[in-house]
Image (tube, rainbow, N blue to C red; front, side, top):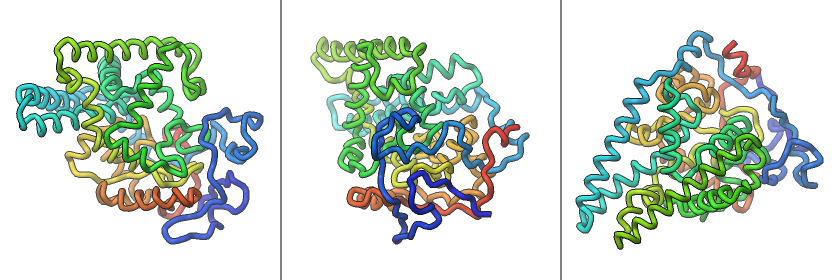
Amino acid sequence: MKQNIPNFFGGKQAGDIRPFGGYIMKPSWKNYRLREMHAENTTSHDGKDMGITADAVWYSCAIDRKKMKELIRRSDGPALRFFGLWLGLLAASAIAAFFSWGSWWALPAFFVYGVLYAAADHRHHELSHGTAFRTRWLNEALFHLCAFMTLREGFYYRWSHTRHHTHTLLVGRDPEIAAPRPPKVLMQFLDFFFIHDGFVQLGRLLRNASGDLTEDGKHFVPDGQRHRVILASRIYLGMILAVILGCAATHSILPAMFVILPRFYGGFFSQLFNLTQHAGLNEDVLDHRLNTRTIIMNPVFSFLYANMNYHIEHHMFPMVPFYRLPELHELIKADCPPPYAGVWAAWAELLPALIRQRQEPSYFIQRQPPAQREPVGLREALA
């Protein structure tokens, strides 16, 4: 049965829009500024974006209830092995980098250290869901460590990311749309070294530390939680200042090469992976198969990315821990578009789309899931 996907833009329905090559043309693009879901708060050109309500039902693949309850069961063992290996490799590369400082061997040593350090970006993301460990304090301690390493203050990020999962690529509701149309391709490429987003994060820390949250933050951080964001932002800035003072005291950039700067010089793979999640895909649809990618990666890339290459699975069932996502993929792959055969296959599709959207921002990549059926909400899947 073909699922009727609501049309929130007026004009033609999605099934009536005429294809152009591998892309689909929509009537217009939208205002990406966060706003409340009330018509009186919209501008004259974004009122048609407000057709999706907070309780809208997302498409969800059918899974046996007992199997789903098994998948969402948390365990410390797999997460301890995963994070233990990562922290061990990080420490080993740090030792190698320290003792090679001043020689050419420092280049490969710091490259490895930087890549592993920047991988905290994916680890803090998974930890923000609270699903990695059964023991809560382990999850929270590593979450805030990784959040600082990637310069994304944890309390703010957790609320932002909750909104991202609730309203994935719903324009005006999702604060984490990485490639709004028309995309700013230069900024995307600067973030291969965290240059644009890094300074955005630093600016956000300064703003939140002042006691006045960013405008986006005022949309999704509850009043009762804002003091945590403010205090944590001040602690982050204090730690950054301590690193700067350490550099001044030692007359060397070496302290910053181990803390803060690795997120910049080691950020290539983080951006390579992150942009594959949603960029170039459809917006304002209640189906993660249409706005999210799953990619089959080699074991090294999957380790760095913390299995977030199974991104359809992660968005559809965010309560499943990252180490169970490959198993979940096998269970639902027949009901999803074919996964991409590697990160380069995904980039071969998304890069031309981003370039094209600069001139034609209403185009998007149309994913083709198997024959549609009526959507099953997550509550029904777990009932």
